[in-house]
Image (tube, rainbow, N blue to C red; front, top):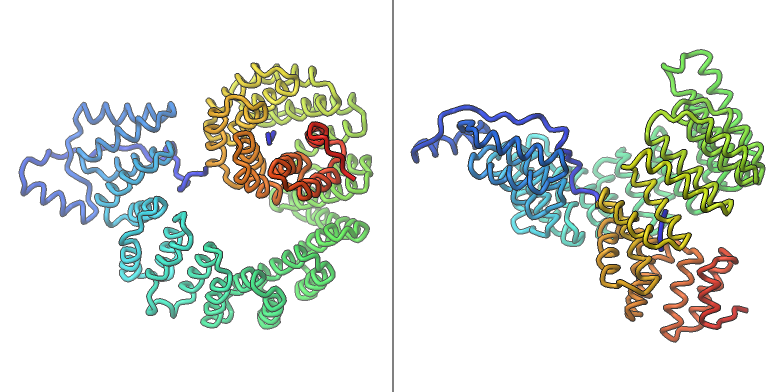
Length: 592
């Protein structure tokens, strides 16, 4: 289905300090090489003469990186690292390799960096983490244990080891490695059990996760971090027991605000609204000056659909923030932002009740600078929903965008308003003008491409979507839109496969992409795999479109009763869904 991989490390080559090579005489003997090795191990820089060739290659690498050619930049710097033994070049090569998503080269650079700078914890951690992410765990536990043993701050070292192991894709193996990393001698520290608890949770072993969290809490009864895990992991094992244990903890440690809010959220998820409100009431009695709890109580009431109570609480909260603004300048407080957040909740309530005029009034009262622009954009959307297209257009035209992002939002919103009003041609013209003004905006190109597809202009759709991918190679939605279109039209299936594989790699849990992959597999005749992906999508996104696809796959598998059941659910969601209605008509199915 169309919809209008983060790097392992958040490292940006563009923010690194400029590189400058040390100027020494070049080594010319084995004895000198031994001296250099000793210096490296001591954390000193190598004695390398800055030749014209080295300078030229460093500059060439930096220029290549500024042009997005991270592959060329990283390989050049990695070659230079091996020639000069300079750890700074290795670090730079590692960063550019990560930007290029070339994990094998990144691992090679990280290993060079760690070897050349063995005292640099960032170098060692990067090398170990990247090796773990590639499934290379041999010796990892012993290496991490050694690091912890030598560390002055054992708790920090354990936390770092846990972060490294968490990079592993096989979470059960990660848990095994962490168990070997943390021998019994270290398990007197609560942080060791917290690390094991998190690893067990990631490995989907909730019982073990809860047990480790309880051990951490037994070692440090007042640990709020341990109590949070007992609640979170315990809800999976025995929800009532977890909630009771949390309440017992809060009776002893009533100031644990984060845990109290966490408990409120979990109670809301369980739709235990009265119990959640009772918990908020306890918090308010303990801290009557904590006016943020008014906002929290209002949120609970909104979830419980008790809108009158929520409105009263939000108006009280706004009055408090107004008094704060009168007493303290806006620069010295966040009162304006807090009041605006409350008004957004009032907007939400008014929309749920169909009182769009009241929602618009609240949007006009928002005066926080960071929200004002978006509030007016939303006002235009509501005016369009009221059928007042002239006022909606006037509101958009009155906006004063300060940057390309705001200009993009305005153009996309106006185009969406025209599209929903059935004026697709006007929407196209709106985005064509915006595209001319901001030719590097992938958001505008993407939406314009989707409008072309809606018009049946497939050549323009394909050309623009390919341009989006060219400008933004990590745009999962663009790969998905193009791949789904090919699969839906039952053509260029080989290309569709590659596009959808890339989309899935970039965003593996996206229900829209899962639906597209399932539909592609249906087109290629792999019904079993198609149903698996479509069911995964439907669990996250029980929409009529996904129901249409899943039902057809089930129907083709002779699972007619299941197909009818899914289609009925989809029709309840959206009785006029075009995809679903066409599917039923094509297959000659009538739902009772």
